[in-house]
Length: 499
Image (cartoon, rainbow, N blue to C red; front, side, top):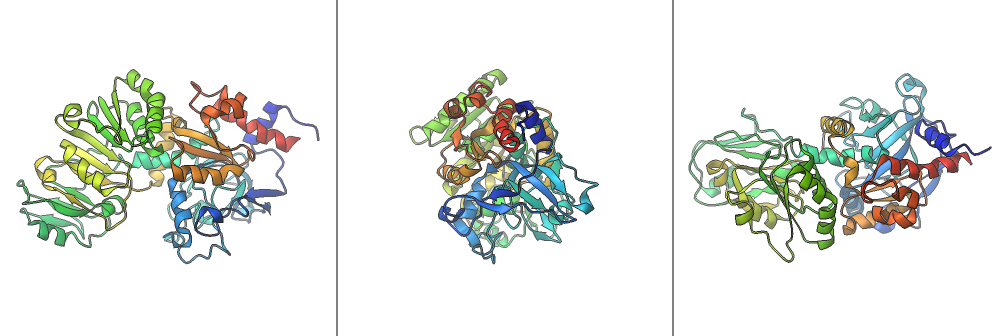
């Protein structure tokens, strides 16, 4: 068979008209530890399956690696989503930040799904009331192809595949999932109605009384503090449940401001890690950004990357960006925010950091515990500030279908560049190295694997200059991923099929 022209091959790849292979490759996790990822450190080859009548065969185009994947590897069968599963006989195929393409529908779904349709996955799948998350109980994206069945196509909340436009890049689409978690952090809700399980105090309780009544709160509970005098001392709060169970402590006056305050002062702790950089980028790209952003981290190279990647954007948006390596220098918050910060977002799961940051809030300020600490983690907090300063301490976890849809729409309208958070890419064979890199915090941004590009080593974008020079030429400013760079990379996969 004669080779097609490169552009024709790429278009055939996009529209899923290339011939399907007889076999494909995917990674399996057989137990806890990186040594249990794959067979002899490599993906395995299987026969390409035929979709059943209620299934679709999909091609995984781009898959992000998340720190949640590291938790799967660390815990193996002890992971809460995998308990009771024998990974040696029923291994996991990880990967939940996925952009995919339909390549073959089953007979019963052929009227709904056609080859070439493109989707992202809302990974938190519920089917008949049971959580069957993509990349956990359901086989995920670290495979060149996969079967998607009724659990995803007809789940409890409808279809968990969300369509994306043909012109949307695969990597930027795959990164909608982690970005949706960032977006969800700014969509928490303060209720005014009291519900079963809530707690209400009409007068200041003693710290002991407060702690006793707040034990055993159900999920989504609110504690109403309907008084205007301070407590006699600080209390211990379960900050793990603020994050994972969405507990909220509210004062006598409303403060439901969930978005970063326009023109305000914001502090991002752990700002230079992958998720921290996403929060900073989002704040800078808001229609009305804060006037001051203070970012802290403990790794000088990551802070330098944050400065190089987004310093110019901060200048363009009129935002004063102050970055501090707290291993060497603490920010002078009394000078940077003399009346306190309007927003504090914490990306490091350290209870002492939460305790130190809460008093830095100004009036009507909000502290967001974005990085979850374990349930049962108690922090000493002066909740009197919730009453006297009308501040809030909140947390969010994961994202919903609506969060995913909102983030997709913001991305596709070009109000948010999800691809700007991409720091390293690799082919399918680089998955295990990618996991190690994420575990070590090797890169300041996200890592994306292209399963159909098998032999690309794990490569930071700047190093593409020597590894894939034609791809590097199409980066923006030599450091930001673009759809043109992605197309150049994917020609390799397309041409290998047509040769």
